[in-house]
Length: 262
Length: 258
Image (cartoon, rainbow over all chains, first blue to last red; front, side, top):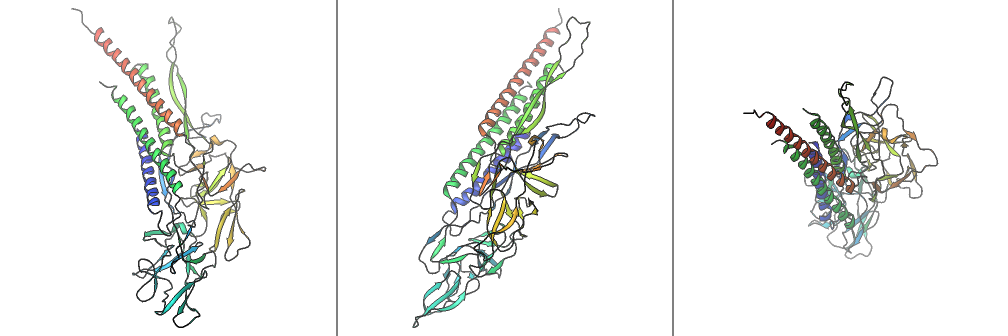
């Protein structure tokens, strides 16, 4: 009985949906996290009798046919790259991006990754690094004897060195944008890598071409909305239960058939 | 075989089909833009031997025959997602999608931008505008899709004015029942059924940041499922009684008198 398989695809889809929702909820407080959504589409249809088939030689055609669907499939779990709210932290090296851009990060293996997580740090050599210690591009070294660091919305990093009163410009942060941000691949640690779907990275200075500006002393929070996630969770759970009931119903029908034979 | 068994069987096959339709609806309870199916049955009268010589002519047999499934094009609920590339259509129109198999129509407005900057569906098929596919530039941001389907963006460093990126092509059909489901939330139009462009006054609105949910009504599907299983069990019971009757007839009639 095909209803069994159809209901099974429904249960699998809802299970995946719950998995995606639970990951969103788990990352509710992760800086720069972008929520995901499970997207479903209906599967192939069997056209038992096709619409528009001729029924007589006089040219009469079937106005409606018989189409039997075979369930649901997952097409993707795209990330919703909308802006998260900014949380002021007061920390000098906390940066939030207001716009579409990403920070470019150099990995130990020489490849580049991209992140929205602006909780930056300074390493032993004074370089600006991510929380994992990877260098933020282009590498900016903060002088040893600097007392205050300012990063303006355009990404210019200035430091005031001991003994002077005027800040000196020590570097310019760049941001990277992609034509299809949702096409980036997540590799964990709040990092994304470029894929054929995302398009090529375009490096620009902040405030240019919509990459957004930088907000010093703030962090971008996750764009997960608790109410949305909980309502999605409820509807996924109920849909799962209902698919379970379909399996029970199909099973009952099979049972009554097999009971015919004594 | 006697006719009782055959008639019962025809009903059971039809119920099996109907359960498949219900199962597919329930599996697609959370599928964006999905339209529910329903099965239609009809009586199939089969002629039997009848002869005026008999005192009363045999009555014709009445079987169950599944004639069609039809799509319920009632609008689904509109869910707010906040994603700028999600659109829901308020009204009876469809978006036009260019697939490798030809032109298809959909109500699923979960759209994306591909690496070449085209507006596409989740499957990567280009969504059609009034003048071909909708193309974005590398520096476009703040996409806004207006109620009439026109798309504007802010281009590059420009903060003052919007640039147009075309208008979503929206079509409607005179006879929705003629549309065929093509999987992947798409519908296809059979030969001879042509989509019509919207005529003013348009009663269709495009809502940005929303998606149309599946229009499956879970309560209806559940009660239909209960009805199907109960009917199926009843027929099974009937067939069993008929079998018992035959067996006892064979037992009784075959008893050899001593």
